[in-house]
Image (cartoon, rainbow, N blue to C red; front, side):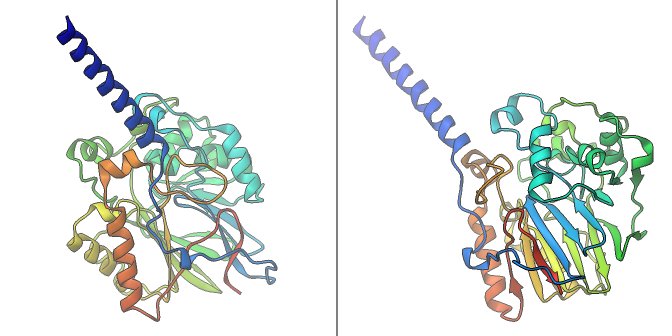
Length: 340
């Protein structure tokens, strides 16, 4: 009898320990894989005609020149880790309302998801509906818009290397690749069978948001030019001869790749375009608070994918060997001048 009680006690202790670990892993955050000294603050005064950016986290960027405003992704919902793992997700209308208000935006020319995973495209149709924007993206993104009931008049599919003009901004989408998840099962589920061939009507599972086409966006404006890299993927040679002033460098998942992969990614994005300024994006938690300072990924995600420390050391090394290359990280929602 005492033996049974001892085994039962050990079992209960194991269950309690596992439960505490799960709670810790889903509710605590890793450090950010960027240097604190790279942080910049918003401008108190915006010069007339300046090109500015506001960052909402992940890869949601709002650009303005005082005449035209447009946004990448428009993602403000932050479903919790348990819901992502075992439940279904849908755009959080209150979070979208708050996110647009925090960015001080009521009208947009366009919203452009960089690919069609939930953390890029889920909220974009509602952002387009609220701001009158065009939803510009792949066929999969268009089907996310259709599933949300966005009218066809607000949906336009992008064509590889076919420029889109929004005011003085000229945006050229360049087909690329999403980085490959190190876990083969997740990789197949998230990247295999990539296209949504019909309207996606939420609530749905996280990975029902297929990747679609992953785009790089080359943006030119009379004041300057930049490249937006939403995922740490690349296609060799697609940016050859295309110089820019700034690269918004998506580094999510970069640390989980091999050292050789990271070097090739840098060569095919940064070296290929010869910028003077790097702004890392997609380095923060997908489930963290929508207010206050950015958090790194939750411990559970870091445990599965790993590599946060690799991302930071890689970026540190690149900053050290390229002293003329400026690194900056953006504040949440504050307006930062890119070009005066």
